[in-house]
Image (tube, rainbow, N blue to C red; front, side):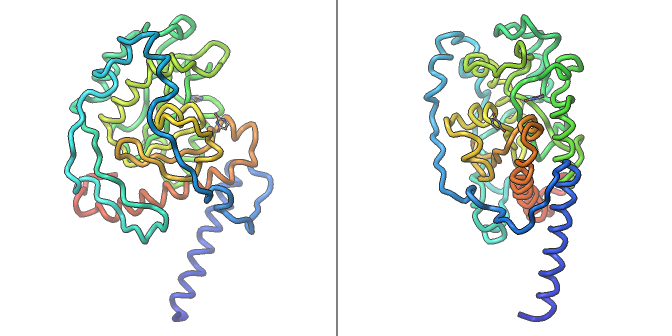
Length: 299
Ligand code: URA
Ligand code: URA
């Protein structure tokens, strides 16, 4: 190895160490443990069970609300060149994404118009307003949480409370601005007492999220916590087991990580979240480089 490449490697290492430390201190972590294996248990093989074993019950409740047109408006094969992938070797474990099978002629506004002053499930009774997905309609990166809390219910925007402020820091830690990304939830109405949405409530609301995803076609979706994980990937696996490993949602890369509200309760988990988000950042950087010729308007 030449002394130039050794110097480059050292300088890269120092750069990422600086980033890591900055991230942890921005997020308020008390201890910075540099020596730990950054992959650790997340390198364990995990299989995500696909199919929809946990949603049959929901279909009995309101079959109309989860009928196929809501679930997905159109599905056609996109040209593989549109989502050209970075080189496998750049990212080690990452395989190039399959060509997307999503396509939609809808806009976010079309979906929101359809949602309207929704009364499709019981959550409408306790809410102040519907909290739709918010952000950049051309976002390459999307975050999906669970459901609005009190602050979101009051302001009509997702992730504006304490968890939202931490999410903003997480976004900024990977060099992006909150306005660049898209942020949404599985459910759009605040559940009473901030309880988890039921399977039925989630199944009624998530088709709108799927339509938004089809409209925007982000390159990566970060699912925050168990509710988002289980509704996008229809798995029973927990976030602790699958976090940090890219999954696939109909041709779109999905990175599961901890929910920021969970990080507020257990700040020691911020370290894992940083590892997960670095993978997202590196993947997006690779895509940007490989797409800079074919997609000059990409952000
Ligand atoms: N928690 C969520 O899951 N979503 C929000 O919008 C706010 C807090
Ligand atoms: N359970 C969740 O739903 N989310 C987390 O981030 C951790 C545990």
